[in-house]
Image (tube, rainbow, N blue to C red):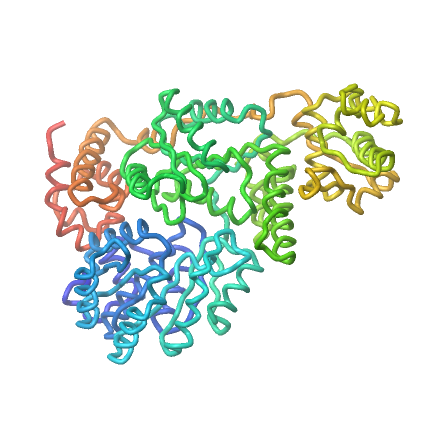
Length: 627
């Protein structure tokens, strides 16, 4: 039932880590989590993407199975994720399977029989499946036989209405505690603020669970947020100058925009595909498989794409439109650099992004006013992150309740933004909004306010007599882009809000009073006042692939090329992504060390017992080929 040798009938977690997965030591809090769950404790695990969450339930599953406790049930939201994780476990010699809608009745029945014979260590199933009468009956039968070891609820933030990816079907998982109170449970997620965390605990009945909250810091990711001028041109320059020939994900808000950007990238010679919910399910699956299996592929997608994407060598995540909140931003950017090597989280945004996101919140016909208010607060927090002049990492981690020091690696650290005293400009903007509303009895949008400030006699300005206001032309010294920057930052500072229920008109907030009275000063980013917003002082960047391979000599590079070609063949035969066979780091270690015997392969990171048995001889053959 696992790849552990017969000499280890009751393996320790460290035995499993080394023998099955080929790693010599745990990372961060992994060991404490694993030991707690192996002992039968409930756990809530918050660990960033790439931190090794899967091992936190896979190792306890193997240890507890070997101790006679039966199968671990893993609740996972995506079929593609189940397929790849089960494939990776089978490659490591662990008896794993999934139950989902892709299987026939006969296949499902056969798996159920295997479960009742105690032949599986892990079974993956979607939350919808767990709540079916047939599955409830199967779980009850396993429980009666003492063969229900552990429930692991992956992507557990989906249970919370405050989370960035709420899925109602997760609410039914409270039945696990109600029906099987003696079976340990663990909930795992990469992203949850305090509000979402408390909701998870309440919904999943984990009040007594031990909480393991890892640092949210991903030091290998460089965060960059720039003002949107020409998003398509900015993206092209970003990819061509910094990530040419590397894998990445580009997020857009609409399906139409996804198709346009994918076509533009393809026309520019970049391997790119579109992915969104409007595509046929089989085509979406085909494109996701290509993204996982091919090198240097760029996926342009809505947020329909991403959860459970385990591709380790995604070198960048780019946002062409602002996400809904910091949790969504963090989750999506976290898909870059899962291998621990450097990666970029790059976003362009503008005033219209704020308006669009606010409109989606305000015009929702199903959300309660309480929910809308929370979502507005989360959007405001993301806008504050975008406009902040401090270290991006400090701001991001502060949102999750974590203190940190400036990272020296984000755009604000590498190229500190100039700050200017915008008190007078802010007062002009706020005064103009006030005067217009006072004169007309109604509010107006950003474009109209800026026309008045700049002294532009548009048809609408003349129609309402706003060219006679005292604020007409008082801001002629700034251009439209600069006034948009001022307005956007005033919105971030909670002095102005966009009322999307009233045609995106501008409304003054209570904090505006202090600014208008001259009681507080206003310092704003000066990025729009002169230099191009996306022109950063960054050293010429060598690709991660180039850096990693630069340390290898000519012979090692030859071996690495042969190993990658061999791995690709094996992956195709097994219908799995190449990284499931061996990670790049394992191939580089093999290329560098040039092993001569099976004994030489022992101890290489990622080379577990089963993989040594399955591939050891072939790896030695490939390494020994003449150069």
